[in-house]
Length: 184
Length: 184
Image (tube, rainbow over all chains, first blue to last red; front, side, top):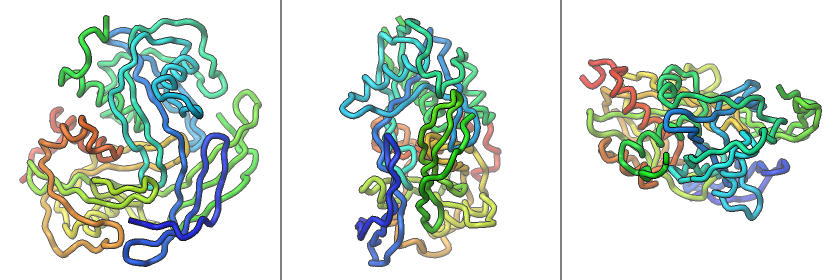
């Protein structure tokens, strides 16, 4: 294991923070590590029907580019991750989901972040309003699920949680892990 | 798009840095964003033969836990990503690879990092020494490729690049994207 010797600096944003720590390795040597203390996050693969999902276009400051992603967001303090999934889907697309099933939970960036992303599939969607998150989401798009594999393989979709969500939903479907009434 | 108003703080580690920026959203509102300036990275799915890959056990400070992963690491200044893939494989396992083919390139954490991970598959492995990176890698393990899907589905492997590397190698194999001589 690696032991924290001392924290050299902290950056505090509204929802999470970054620390620079002096760390002792197993062999006794000292090194420095950046660590993000990040709340859990939820991402949603939202099915309009068995063949089409909703995706969002969003400006990503860290990349300096717009991306096409599945809806996602950070858990609020005290919020259940599944509740967060429904809330983020609603805020980013204006849709509510009747069914939300967990398909996978993973660490996106273990080199520097403790973030866990829990991916859900959603069905029984109903549009209840326009999207609320107009600050960050520029457009909601309907995409053929069957076209996504090709988009991933060609590099048109390169966001980790989106690629994982789509790939693992398909894997669960092939293995019979998705309940039969999910699309009803 | 979102515009940087000013940088409020920087943490500088040896290989990358974290910034806290004041940012103007499209609607004119101000907010704060943490952004990691990270070098490109390479990850490798190293095949001993068509049925077995090498994985490494590694302590991850950000998680406070040991993980089981495919070998990976950051590009050195001026280094080609493919060269980095071969070097990291060697340092973490002691093996050199005759073949390295790129299978996917993606953004692991677009909410706060510009990191790109380029995933390679390696074959024609030859053990040339013991692993060099004894500071960080605690053990090299041989794992049946056929067992990995089950390990992923059960949550025994939860590292993003590892899950993506394994899933997308399998997808490329099924689509006939892996050269016929890769395993020769």
